[in-house]
Length: 258
Image (cartoon, rainbow, N blue to C red; front, side, top):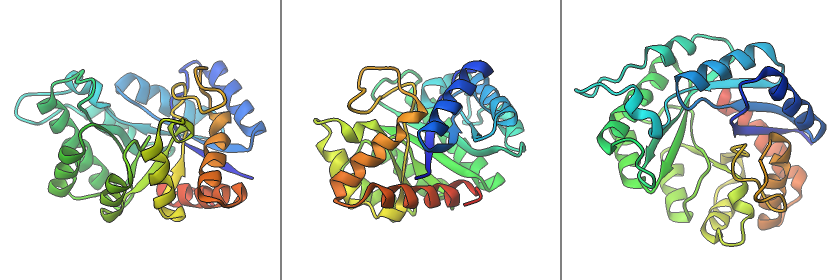
């Protein structure tokens, strides 16, 4: 089986990252999307992708960090992010979006910075990686106003079937993390069953959200097959079917060779 970890955060140290890549490959995880959350981590992700096989990068500003690039008037300074989008192995804008759970940046700033990154995804024809937590209505409102990029994914999906339907109706994909293995995440499990198999991908969000039976440990890309196996069990299908489908869907999502 071949797996893609659709979303993780590798350490910037090349030696440490290389060790995680080797461990992932041994577990059948042959492609890793290393996600930027601010200018520094985006630059690091791009540098690792240029040096290590099996890694691709994204560049973006997480809603927690929106205040670091926000300028009054709704015109954020995304110069550094935009500069990275021209690199060969930088395949997406994000993660970006809204987080009304922690509110680490003011909501107005989050909305302006998110909208500007949606516009970047359109301009460069790259994938949009969305983070949305307790902000569904405003997330959908911004996507409606800006237009949904052709390739869009809601990472670490935490909604239920109702939110899944709204995302799918927009043409977006859903990415499921180790949360789908948690006993108390019933709505997420229901969404993983509701979502068509060719519209979902799997991720670790490492080093966070380690799946059962490794919950509480530092997560790593090698554990994404546990997420896939949980989805297969929920849907009552062979795990090989989930591996094949998510590999091909990730290929389309990021424009990678199948």
